Length: 355
Image 1 (cartoon, rainbow, N blue to C red):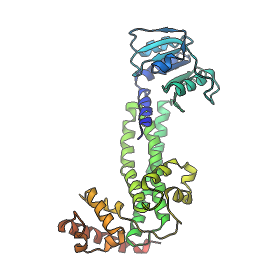
Image 2 (cartoon, rainbow, N blue to C red; image 1 turned 180 degrees about the vertical axis):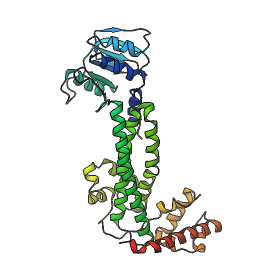
Image 3 (cartoon, rainbow, N blue to C red; image 1 turned 45 degrees about the vertical axis):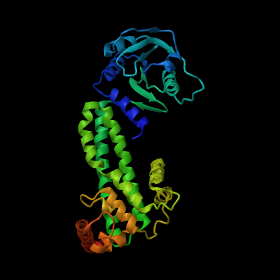
């Protein structure tokens, strides 16, 4: 998670149901008033403030915020939202900052957020709703009851996506061991892992917006997304060769930049991550399958893939050949040979199912 995302998460947590700031916003909405609240002070904010008055040693409380919001001007809070710094302030951001908002309050909020890099909350008295602007983004605070229903529905969708991902991973394993893997099977895994990751991120945001009420949702989410990013990364590491202009790291970045419509196009995904024709036969290096070997350190996995450079060669190597790899040792070589034998035996049982 990037620093920008961490900052956004902190803003959502501060505005979650049950927090003092959210309670203040709810009071404003209940009173039928509008409001403009800047969540942070400093030079950039002071430079666009005119009129109003400054408050000394005024600790934040929901009641104080609601009372001060009855005046026409904006309210400015400290960065940690523990104090009220200004009230009844007229904000004058640059008119050159582009905004798609139509209402004067929301236009001002968006421009102030962009110009000062501070979160700004606009409360609409007509729609009785609060919207938080932060940088180039905006998010309307949803009703907790509706948010819980939405999150639960999304969890059900995520559960289906995770089952489809697990099926794709199992199929790819069978194809890799049988030496019939192709780029299409690889792309299917990468597509589904990325969809699970994105939906999980949306549910996580909803859970954060729910505050303490979202704890159960977060627990369910953690179980459903466990290991997904690792599987996605290891799959790309297996197939995106260093000799290409695309590296596994840049492939992940390119994947994250795809729109949902593009993500549903296998050819588009293959091109983005640096894979060739979807039906081309390919062999992995073995990173993903080696990650499932118990107590096998990463440096040993790297030594194995670097030595064999082809999972099929590793899969069919005898104990002596495995022992030749630096850092393996006889005991670990025997363990690996048993692991590979179990993979081969399982794949023989699956063989009729592989198209």
